[in-house]
Image (cartoon, rainbow, N blue to C red; front, side):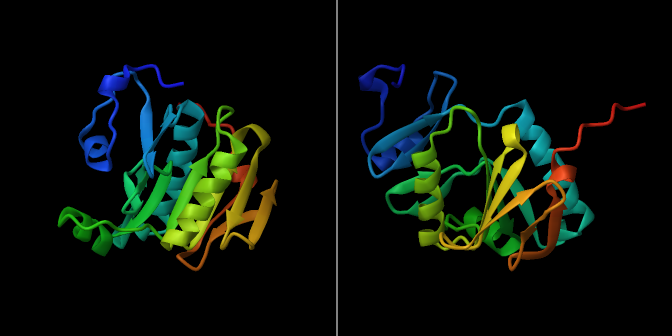
Length: 186
């Protein structure tokens, strides 16, 4: 249940886009429904850092960026915030010019509070909007589901490599590397 007064809640997409919640949560908009979530936590930021480092090492920063929790208008009535999304430089420029752009690659880092039906709902919406690759990462179980469509999914464990092809062909990482314990700085 949303912990804010109903008078303060937005009732239209335009109101939602101008709304600044004060309850410490983040929200998505789905055809008039407010969907509350808490945003990425420490474990999730670690995963983002590992993936961002790989992104930089592979040189992909020259053609785009990995962004944490961007606002993505999937349709005229759906605004979602994937945990991580890849945008090309052209998409970033189009966004700067006020255009809505759909990332080709998104990553959801699943927390204990995420509901299975909500995850499936988002994956379906992503593919319907034009996303080409979705990673669903479950840190607690050290598993990554790599979707290239709703029907094509690869379950990655242990030494399996997660791939972002065809969007970022050389963006691959083993599950063990993704979840490796951090090494303390010396």
